[in-house]
Length: 640
Ligand SMILES: Nc1ncnc2c1ncn2[C@@H]1O[C@H](COP(=O)(O)OP(=O)(O)OP(=O)(O)O)[C@@H](O)[C@H]1O
Ligand SMILES: [Mg+2]
Image (cartoon, rainbow, N blue to C red; front, side, top):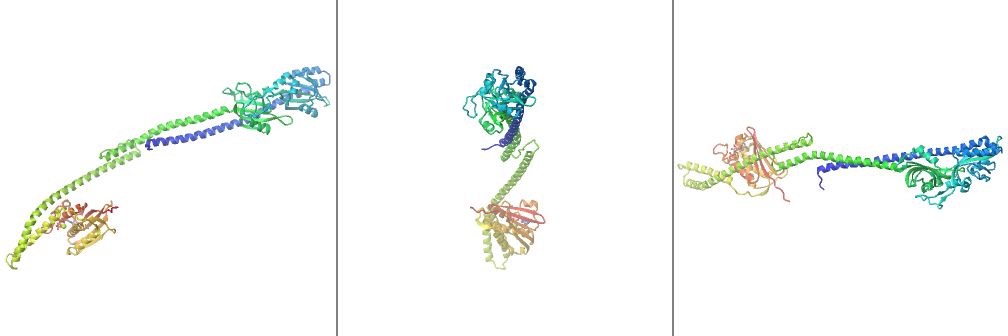
């Protein structure tokens, strides 16, 4: 898949934002929710303490009423037989005033004398009751939560037995239970001894509050601890008193809004609190909803577990809070993505536009429009790039112009040389035959002449001059010869050495120091060896002549920088060539030598030969100091 630079930039922006947003959301949600949950859970265990306080306070209330009443003078008197009717009247009043469900007095053996709630029922024994029996044996006040059987409840009053009677409602997650109803009740019960002045037990006074369907405690917990807060129509804080695992007093609601009396605790809480006697402080499913909860056992006077005290906070509020946080974070991430996308898009456009400009400019330049200029306003690296690009284009243009100029000159020179060559060839050809005639006839004349014959010297001069003419003609023919060279593989170093060996012995070279710097590796070229050798000889002799037989000649072979050609350099310390002559150097018959000494064909012929080898000859000269001729011939490439 090929992505544009802009898409890549935008994408990487998005990836960064998405990644950080996602991590942020996760971490934030985790931190917040764990904080909230921990707080809620911690609060619930504190709330359980408050609930326990309220429950204890209720126990104390009942205990105080019973104790104070038992110590009242008229109660003692009544039991001693003075005025029992007064006792009955007073007990009735106190029971109603203090909201006690039962308020009963027995004699010292536990036989009921009077029940304030149910005066018609008396004479039965309460000596077997766990609270009363303890007072009889210890003569001390006792308060406790106790389970009261239906039979006992019926004695205290039919309505009380009915209030305790609870039909068990099927509850999800509760431990299976065979019974369908609960007949006994759970009561806060206090009993106090009634003593005479000597401290002898006259009787027992006991009172109690039936907890079944009595909502004083749980609603007080709800109001004081949770201020009755409501979330989506449900109480946030709830409290419950269980008899065994059964809700007998609660403000947890069922779906129809009624109190969830008759529902039961979940099995896991049952196992922890009822079976093991340990508190349960964590999340739990209560009737219909999940709550952060705290449960602890309620024990009777014998320290047996008979019920549970519970408080709980509705989890939904916190879960919703958690989700709201999550969605808020996600929303922020989303907005972040959109903003990042917009910003990165514009940023990318700003970067991409000048790049497009540069691409367009490159294409224009590649197409030959070297005058095209990139214009970028911004002052940044792209601007630097554009400036560099522009200066590259202008130097390209300069080079292009130089190249054109040089090519033009080369072409002109080649054309001129070709024209001269044709002319020379024609003339040479025409002159060659008559010249042959002159030479052979003058030789015949010479043969017929005596050695001292008159005019012999003149004929000899004719022969010398004609011979010279023939040499010139031969040179001309060489120069104009269009035959292709006979190519063979050769080492340039070898050719140069041979050429030098052929001329070195001449007197001209006796006082010339020749220094060779030859490439150590064989430099192979495809060439006509004898023609190249002729070129080297021409150049070497010219150099020696320019030094008047005295000086230093350096010969050098090397490969060109681009490794495509071999360069052969001849450097002399001769008189040099004036600028105006350099142009004409390769023209036929250009010579500075005296008449009769040079034909001016040497370099012209050499130029032709090198050109046919697809090479070149260049000259650098400094008048008075010396001259360097550089012959370049294409290197032979091994064909693989
Ligand atoms: N190394 C050199 N130093 C100075 N001048 C040179 C050098 N080589 C060539 N020339 C000049 O170039 C001219 C032409 O050289 P070219 O070899 O073509 O002819 P020539 O040497 O004059 O005659 P020929 O080679 O026929 O004897 C020379 O006359 C000389 O003026
Ligand atoms: Mg010469």
